[in-house]
Image (tube, rainbow, N blue to C red; front, side, top):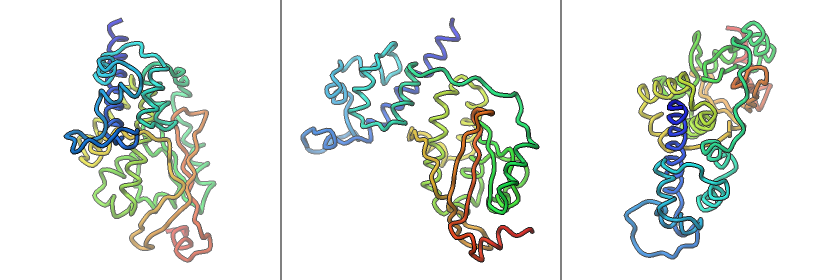
Length: 275
């Protein structure tokens, strides 16, 4: 029972931090409040959110402090309206409050690496790679390995946040980093009790100040993007159409398929050619 209370406290604490982060991003003008001169705080005050949502100021403060249990869906919906949360953010909020369906049961204990390797290779000459639920690159075809400089087993988030040449490799790094952190946080709502998931977050925080800064913005998103822009040392800047697929047989697995906008381009031919 103590373990269950600890888990619930972690979810409520994350809910409070998330709402506080979103509150800081909403201006009084966006919710129809009059301008009253300079304000010491960014965004809305707690009392303003409570007033607009029709809840008591003390009760809302308890929610942000992670102390409020059994917050009703209607109250959460009212708060979401005030904070202008999108569908993904609302779903994340409800999960943390305990109103989402339980996560899907785990699939097979181990991936079929031969099968996954065959799938990504079948997409050649276009790049393709597969990530597990912890964003480890489980398989990558030759084109993807050369495009992203993948050398053996590695983690995509570490490539993005910790590699010394990441910002050069990913010209749209700020956008890519925000989307990756947003997707990671959305996934975390279903993995708050997973020690390996938490270890991944702590490892990234320790290795990358940039990750810690983006993570602390509490971005929540399911947007993987439809274009992946990469700078290759020899081929220059490449913009590829991206499709991110979830694999039902392996919960949490992502299959990333990339396709050149101009299949006949000389740069693409050079990248796809065998080394």
